[in-house]
Image 1 (tube, rainbow, N blue to C red):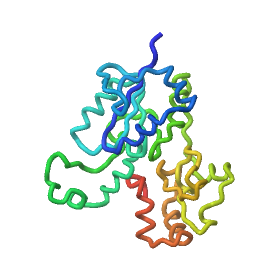
Image 2: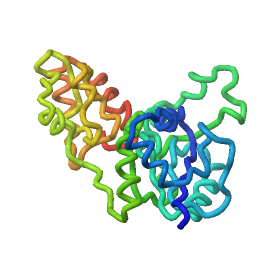
Image 3: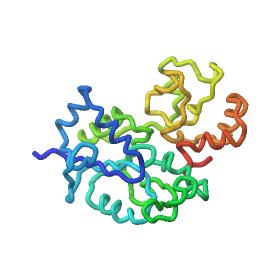
Length: 247
């Protein structure tokens, strides 16, 4: 029986999520690769897959209209499409440009008018094609991806949390960053990463997007009152990975 085929595709992004997947070495990840056939993965192979694909992992945001047909072709050929990483799921850091009118001039200066550097607003892949599952994060966690792919190979529907990161901090016994005089967005950030940042003394930046029913105005107030931020700083901090989401 042939193995299910797995392909990676990239759009506007740094390709860091794909690089994260190449950091193999643990038993679970290597075991997974025994049960799938990698047919396209630019970071690790030169071969491409023009035919049918069982699982397509799409990294990067949609920023150029010329990429629409390529995305639609991936959707037509793939049985399952997974948005892979923050840029693909929400627009990610790329979406900060959506709140700046002159970003081309700021970034490219004298070359801003050249066609090769033109791009429009950054949107999630789901704004163009139907996405079956999302693996958020910056970069996306390879262990979460391995778990999702393993569930799919076993015919199970993957569980992707929508509750906040604070739940995972409590499970780990991590002291709240606010108790340390710091700020954090874990109270509204979507969990699933295991909350490694607060456990290492680093505030959660909500790189996985927001949890279900997140109260963003309340987050702004907490960042100002407990985090010592100005209103403009609180709003811009909230947008770092979630500029396309409410808030």
